[in-house]
Image (cartoon, rainbow, N blue to C red; front, side):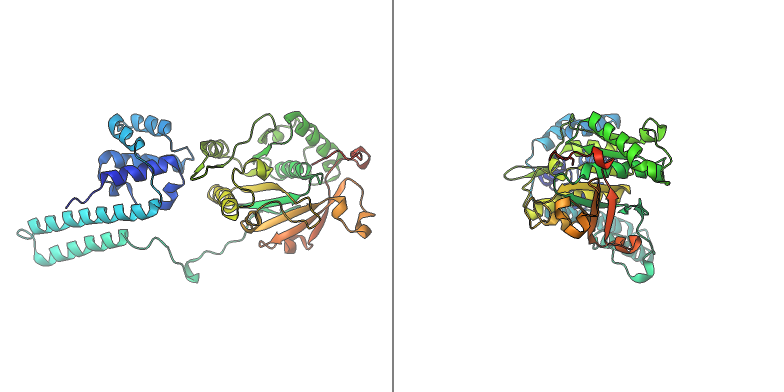
Length: 409
């Protein structure tokens, strides 16, 4: 009986190359040593290393890395690439794991049968028992159950806690209708964050606005809004601290983080490159969500996959990620598209347009002021701020805001 399956190994490895997220599904099941062929072991180890460093697991990077390690085999690599990717890769990984354990058992019992003539029986039994326990542990449940005694007490950490709390290691959603001033507000948050933490870094992909427009907005925010706040230290846009604000605009075409076709889904390799580029950044702003979402906007499953991808990124790399999304244009309100966009986050803010504010409040507000509602709050932000609604100056001086219906997002 053959205790290996080379075709199965090739199928699993090619599935990871085809969809890098497959590695997450099986890395708790398989180790490199579970593959039979040494080249397959080396390839799996390289995949884990690339993924750990947020480098795409693709043909080019794998080949380059294996050549560096002097472990590349052109023929075996080609055979893997020529294999059809498989569905339910985690189930096949369990089959491969079972074959690996049987090989280890076979080796263990063969060694015991050889050593039985020259070794004390009790010592051999104890040694064999320990090795069997290790094999059992290697195949044990992958869920690490906890109880209260082993869980460390922690508090949720926020950036901008004294202005507009945004949790670290999480994704926060900011939604509003067109014209509310979403892009103005997130730019203000970026500038405030750098005043709060001058040595930190912010990245914003403001995909609907050209670079020069964002710069002009930043100048207005500094000169007409933040100048009145004694928490702000740096008013000049040319101050070196603002070199820690990096951004992209409408000049750079956004990409879909997950690519879908009628049968398959695949994480865009550009996402891994973006993560690698932003590995040292602390606050990431994505505006708007729909520019980076490649699925069916009303599909809850696809919406959750998209949000989970961002949540994993935030958690793994200790980032605060703020995603901007559109509300429905209808009078019923609510976010555009699938409810899973909201279900997948723990905190949602909603920026209201003047038309959405009650008449008694509207009369008291200048047209450069907006009301921000805490729409969903699982982090206790309402208790931090001691309020559920916040009045914010979003635009510059009131008489400079357009009143002819021109949209100022």
